[in-house]
Length: 561
Image 1 (cartoon, rainbow, N blue to C red):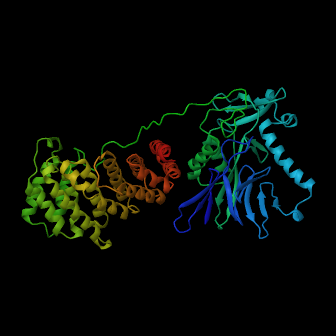
Image 2 (tube, one colour):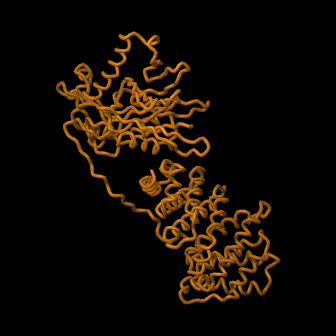
Image 3 (spheres, rainbow, N blue to C red):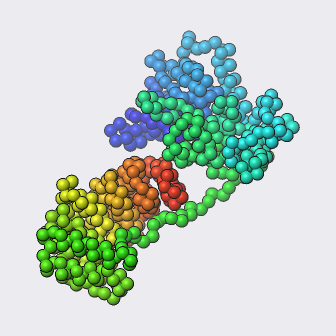
């Protein structure tokens, strides 16, 4: 069997063939320990069971239907079984220890007792708070004006009349503000480079040589998790896009969203003079699900000029016979008068001319016709219900053109994929005929979008994101069946986009809105997003793209994080 460990304190046994969980081994905290299970850092197979090591110093052995705890004074990075049945551990103090059941290999009783005492003392120290000797070494509170904080919200411990108190730095007032008495630290507290923290969290980072660097992050109760994350990034010169990911990790491990509470361990149990337990907030979504559909249309000021250029381009081609062009000219005049859409009509002959160009003109020349189609579908008469079959045929022709275009087709190489996607997007915004047509071709539409999701052209990338957003909005509002599997396909394409790190801000916002909308549509999409770990990816992806992107990402995280 395959064994995996995680930050929820569990070991899962899985089938090597299917990766399905066959059994779960759970760590139950002992008396005096934090109520939440520790993060497990390693797991190993024993002769008759399994062993795991944890960040808080626990080593747990599940063997012969019994559970054994080996308590260390520091974080235990790894546990390893030995051929003779013994178990080896490596911990934060740089010591390798070997544990055995064989009497002849046991260390002297004095040495074993010293190890147990160290573990007990470490636990007692964390629950009782700083000693008198430690308090005497803290900076004096009456001299706090001489110590300037490094950043807003920084927490510093001072000696105030022989009592350890914590204070936070205020940039606005340039002073330290007393928060409360330090009654104890969380179970995972400690020091980094001589600085005391309420929490010292282990983080593993891949190195360029293929190895793993084991680092430590310091965090104080009440501190802004993003401030602590930025401090860690600066200290280790890490890429800035890790900021949100690290901040999320801090919140997960420490409850970093809670109000400042001195003496509160990671489980929320407070030992300080005051404790605040905020009520669980209701899930309020400002941006999700997305409402309505996005389209690519011309403004009233530019419509006439753009349409005239379109006609002129068509006239350059040999295939532009007089009968087709007369219908095109009539259609363009109608489309240019955007203020008359409510009253104007488009004839079957005009629409037939567009379809004929798409079906008979080569890809290198068909793109103006495709552009005309994506404009025509926004006219309410052109996209009425009786024209559902027409738009179904146009969508099929557009897909064919997109599949046939090659690098040798010049301008069409980028224009046809872009305009095909924009036609699809506009079909959602048109009338009931175009809506019915595009909804009947969603599988092909998503296949096209996926094939272009990693395009090097920014206009195509925006078009892909818009199609995904409109498909997600449609599926979210749809009450009928027939769309099985399409929700998961949207999630899959979003995952590809987020991993590419190539989308511009507006395209990223639309992609995130698509993800958030589709996970609200059904549980299968939500499960698919979780399986791809998108909850951990959305905030780093959104970080460089402004406040709206970050806000949408936070809402997605609240749904699937």
